[in-house]
Amino acid sequence: MNKQMIDKMGYDRSITMFSPDGRLLQVEYAKKTVKQGSTAIGLVCKDGIVFIADKRVTSKLMVPSTIEKTFRVDDHIVASAAGIISDARVLVDRAQLKAQQHFVTYDTKIDVISIVKEICDLQQICTQSAGLRPFGVSMLVGGVEEDGDLKLFLTEPYGLYFQYMAAVIGEGESEIEPILQKKYKPSMTVNEGLKFGLELLKEFLKGELGFERIDAVKITLTEKKSTKLGVDELKKLFK
Image (cartoon, rainbow, N blue to C red; front, side):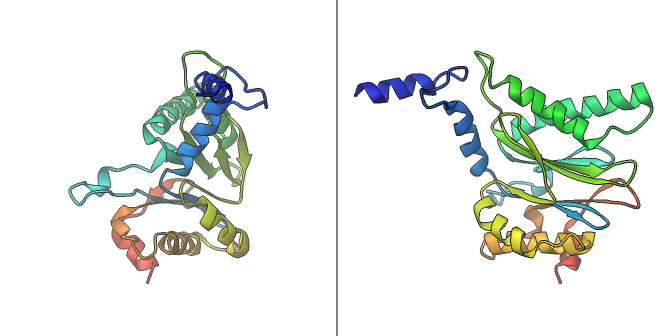
C-alpha cells in the first residue's frame, strides 16, 4: 500500500480532519449515500405545495403503508427525505419538537425557515465533532406560511440549505432535474403538480410505478394543512 493511499485513508476516517485539498471526505460519502436513496420530489404550485416520493418497496411481503418517505412536521409543514431514513426520523423528531415549543410559547405557527435552520444546525454540528458522523440524508422541507407565502427548501447532509421552486433528491436526481428545469411551471395547480410528479417518477422507474409505492402529500393555500393521498386518489389523478 503506497503512502498516498495510506494518507487518504487517514483523512477518510476522521470527520474533523480536512484533506490537503480542503475536503471532508466523510461529508462527501454522506452525499453519495443520499444519491443512493429513493427519489423524492417537491413542487411549489400556484395554490399549494406537493411532495411525491418513491417508497421503494423491495419485497411483496412488505406492507407499503408502513413505509414513510414524507413526514408531517406541523399541520402546515411537510418534509421528505432521501438517504438513510432512520437519520431523517431523528431530524424530523427534533423539528416537530421545535414546532410544538414555538406554538406553546408564541401561540402562532412556526415559519418554514425556522424548521429548516433547526434541522441544518444539527446536521452541521455533526460535521465538526469527533466521534460523530454526518447525517446521511438530504431533506425537502416545505409549507404554507400564515401570510400565504409558499416555501420549499432543500437541506444538505452537512447543514447547508437552499430555497427552491421545484427540487428532486435521491437516485433520480440526475435524470429528473433536467426535466424539471424544462417543464416545471409555477402556474400549475396542486393536482397538475401531483400528476406531473407522478409522470416524472414513472419515466424514471421505467414503467415500474405502482401507486402503492408512492408517498404523496399536498398542502393547499386554502386549508394550510397537509393531506396524504391514498392509492385511489392517485389513480384518479393519473387517468
